[in-house]
Image (tube, rainbow, N blue to C red; front, top):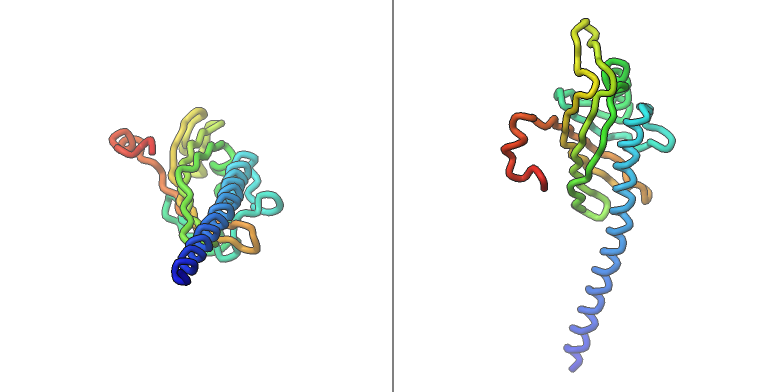
Length: 176
């Protein structure tokens, strides 16, 4: 009888613990969604300082952009983005769609985001060549690793892969 009581109490404890974890993950899920929305809003308002209400990057964050450039901390990320802003980014708008949020640990999350980017104005590249034109669209997949610092989620790493328009239609998982 004593063993049965211990087993029942242990099971109740585990159920409560799982319930608390579920509640915590739900609150963290909302905070993560808000962080991804901040990233989208910063891009669309062309606020590439990523400070104030758009403060999303951890100090030690890393970013690999679609061209394979590797920026090794918050400062390099902001400097890199700001460097390209007057050439191309300021003429783009984006729409993010979170595909998946997976908690790797209580303070670590992997987030997959699909972006659909639209060029709002014809772009002339620094070498004088015509770049993307108004109305052109591209897609990309973003792989975020987020970390929780003092109850706030920050980007620890971000890898961006452009979607190959020719390959995408044959992807059997395209709508997942």
